Length: 361
Ligand SMILES: *Cc1c(COP(=O)(O)O)cnc(C)c1O
Image (cartoon, rainbow, N blue to C red; front, side, top):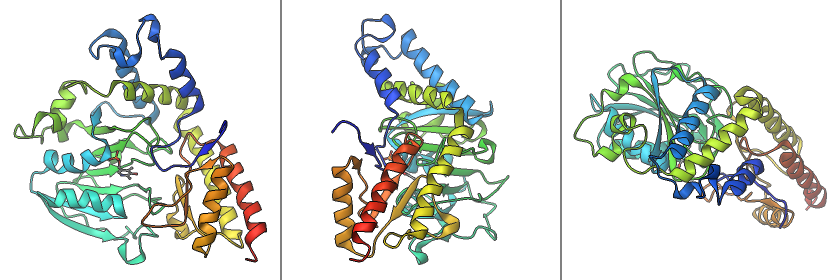
């Protein structure tokens, strides 16, 4: 198939422009006669790529100087385990449970810490973010962990908890760089790369420097944030090609006008989707209006057969990977930064057609 729109939740779509640039540079990067994959990670070409990726991220997210930017192998799931390993002082942590990824983070922390789940969306099957207006963060907690966007349930915080004493650690895997976040509101932000940053296999972790003083010598070096920071994300060989693609994606994002410009487009894309779903005779959104994600949009018909027919016919038209997560069913359109508005329009035009053909089913 020539032209498709990929609605996958991750690994997700990468801008065409980025892939073309990578293709053009594949065999001979910067006149080195080698591909990026073959460059020494300590040589000047790769050092430039790594520094540039960090510099662009700092600029795009307005990251203050007292935060370290790390490229950490093992994806977001590695951070689930590394966060308790590195930041535990009192061995107590607060978590908010907003779905499967939060639960996985909690399960990892429970192995070594006393975890208090302050709020959980479980009772409404994670279709809404719990009300945080009376959130009581425990003063002795080592940190509070949240998941800003819930990739599977399709929910997103539109108001964030605030805390000065207890650092907030946020899993932003599926909404980093999609809208403006004030980095200084957090002790740490992390994100698996394969949604809004680049290819899978590593995470970007942005950590306030004072927290690094908590990382103990007893942690294996490869999992120790302080060691990774002290070695400029090169304690060992970093995922060089992934970081290169990340740099290209960040250059692309800057060219689009940065986070504020892309966030406007993301608002428009999400509004188009939800306006249609809320007025449809056939499709609906299972997510509470005030918690809806602008990145991952689950939807269903009332029939499993129609859902599978929809997925099948959509993919025959180049609208790919719309099947919902196996635990939720139905459909899900992931519309990260790289999804152009034309992709959403193509999806909606097919949904309207499908509705006309099947609404009286
Ligand atoms: C995808 C995802 C993860 C897992 O990322 P890996 O890189 O596969 O470990 C964790 N949290 C959230 C919110 C995600 O969307």
